[in-house]
Amino acid sequence: MITTRSILTLLSIALVALLAACGGGTASNSSPTPTTEAPPTRTPRPTVAANPAATAAPTTATEPTAAAGGVTERPPVTSTETDFTALGNVQVEMKINGLLKTEGQADEPIKLTFLEIWLQNGNRSLTIESDSPDTGFSRLIYIQIGDQAYQYVESGTDRNCLNMTGSDMFAGSILTPDSLIGDLNDARLAERGVQVNGFTTDRYTFNLTEQTLGYQGQANGEIWVSSNPAVVVRHIGELTGTITDNALDESGAPLPLPGALSNLRWEYNVTKLPGNATITLPEVCAQQQATGADIPLPPNVSNQLRMGNLISFETTESAANIAAFYRTEMAAKGWKAGEEVEYGGTFQLSFTKDGRSAAITISTADNKTTVIILLSSS
Image (cartoon, rainbow, N blue to C red; front, side, top):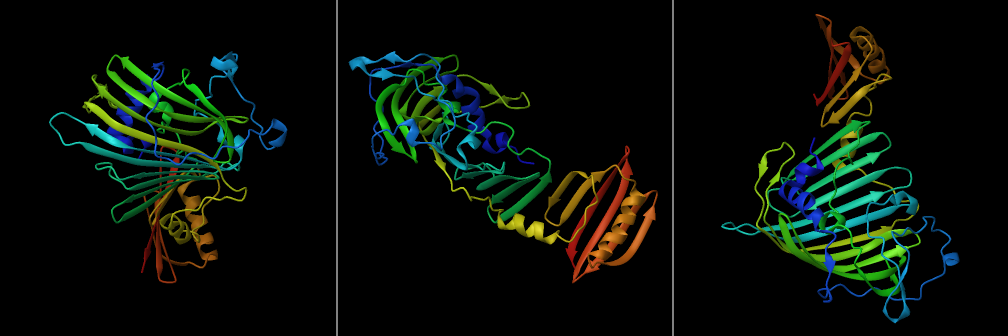
């Protein structure tokens, strides 16, 4: 199974492992680099009573302080580690692009898009798209629908779908603005009551100069923060720096790092989705599910997996009981029994239906029975 860290390769290890230390730098007095995005529409901030759907209470790290000119300024909520289910159905998108520079080598372009959907019913999806070379994929999608987890990989003309039951596809690190620059306690209030992505927000600017062991660089940009509910709604910026230290990969082996990160730009947005929003399986995954829809499964199975025309699972039932189950249940589903072989406690059953074949192998080891079902066209 492809993991989030493995598909991000050099980018995730370099940025998540090293640049997370870039937070906590001191804010300078210079203005952030101007951005080319169209300015958000500015409207008066509504009262709390005008926003009855908001349920999350605002959180603050410190008491409000008086800013210049008598305006009360409260440090922004800058963490993107948010339980978005409190907002209803939500979409979270982050785009990142730039260059990795290594002395003596051609610049390596970065272009990644992360699109995560959180639904109130617990279903989730994460789509990662890459135009960067050497990632080994162009699109990767993790999907969780009920107890069914899917991993879809699109690479060139190849389309593959892995389906598992009871697995968590969302464990591990996902690239966010926090991973790039950390906390922004020194961000400066620029404007109040800005309407962005359907939220009423306060806009802050930041300009960080950071020099730590193994890294030096500068980041600047803007952040839009809603106080009720407390959530980062929009986050844009640019990072330029030099990596001077070494790193280790997940196995502990030395990892060569680029010497510099040039104009690494990101754009992060949180938007609300309609109440009837659903998550749709990629076509390959949907076809895979349809292909095996008439294959019965016994109760109390574990480690269930589907990939292409292969279905496998484990059970504590004996091999003989599982063989008896398939003789009965496959016939009930319209399958015609074919040749059956038993040797050493292992059963091999075969069935046909409407030009399709199903070969079922049932074996027992270490007090567990493993079932492998291979479907094919006759």
